[in-house]
Amino acid sequence: MRKSHSKELDQTVEETKEYYRQRASQYSDWAHRTDRYEEGAEPEAFWFDEAMILIEALASSGLSGDVLEIASGTGIWTEELLRNAASVTALDSSPEMHERSRSRLVRNPKVRYVVADIYNWVPDMSYDAVTFSFWLSHVPGSKLDDFVSKVARCLKLGGRVFFADQRREGLTREVMDHPSGEIARRSLIDGREFKIIKHFYSSEEITRCFLQEGININISNTATLFYYANGVKYRAQKSQVP
Ligand SMILES: C[S@@+](CC[C@H](N)C(=O)[O-])C[C@H]1O[C@@H](n2cnc3c(N)ncnc32)[C@H](O)[C@@H]1O
Image (cartoon, rainbow, N blue to C red):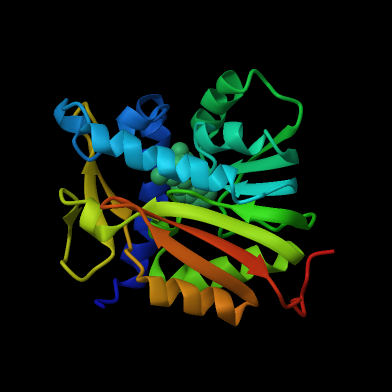
């Protein structure tokens, strides 16, 4: 893999946050997230069919108790989580995303909103479950281990993990700066262009880095577009968040 220069990478992590702040108004339903949306094209029916498989997978993943949702966005997943969770800490760097989530969830008192950059955030409690959908591919390779370690530290022993994301095969129109790199170009419907992190991890890479942190992961694929992963923490961390 081509290693991006660290300054360029830091800038791209910042630009990824800015891109989603600006995109928040165009991200509140499933139709907004296809790679054809900016071209004004309607998503194909299979897009919705496969997206619903992810929602069903989350529903059957058994996440309950105090749940941490990282990169919670406009609340599409938070809404599902609230069916079984005692509380959801919804963390996102974009206040605009949270605003949309608040309206979707009619200010549900079980949700605690945290505006933070996940890479700087310090967890203040431990959780029964941690979830992050359509997020892992925005974590650059150089930050993956730290990210997974943070997830593991704030997850209780026996706690569960669920996440879902796009597969490389499903994102045919992603414009990568370099074919084997992790920086992509995205534009908004008004034509503004942003560089964002887009790193397609293999199932083996994902499984290995979670295993290192004491979390056993099982990954399943939908027909073409997505994957989803269920995990259980089987080993406590030395630096566990109390
Ligand atoms: C692809 S969206 C996914 C949102 C939501 N999970 C969903 O599927 O609808 C990525 C989210 O990550 C948030 N984000 C980007 N960089 C972040 C960072 N460094 N820390 C926390 N959140 C970040 C964005 O604001 C955006 O809401």
